[in-house]
Amino acid sequence: MRTLIPTLLTSACLTFSCSQVNSAVQISSKLIIGSWKIETVIKNDAIQRLTECEENHSVNFTDEDMTMLKYEPGTMPCTFSSHTNSYHIKGNTLFEHQDSETHIYEIKTLNLTTLVLEIQEKSSNEDVVITKTFTKQKSKS
Image 1: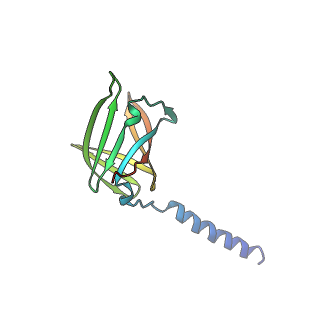
Image 2: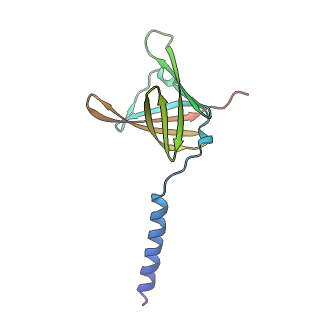
Image 3: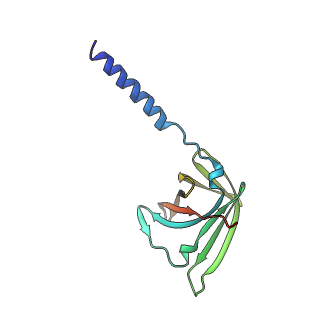
């Protein structure tokens, strides 16, 4: 009997803690609104060195749209491009709707200062996992 009670308590604790770990992560979509500047890019576990131009990449989120601002290397100054697409968040997944395509990102981290997105892509018939870390920019008042 003495060993039965600790065993039951341990089983109850493990069951409770496992159910919390497996529950779906709910992301507050309001936290994503604002301007986010790229900090790091990791491709298949290897940190990618950003060029001076790429260090200026950012993404701006409103309630319904996201705008990617890119600065491509080449002749200086950097070549600027942008595109705006609609998006929605479900659980910890961000769906970017671009024309007839939907890009699916897993939100690894989203808080007041940090956004980490992970996307899986195919490149030359191999799977590529890209993780991008952004920091929130202070709004200009």
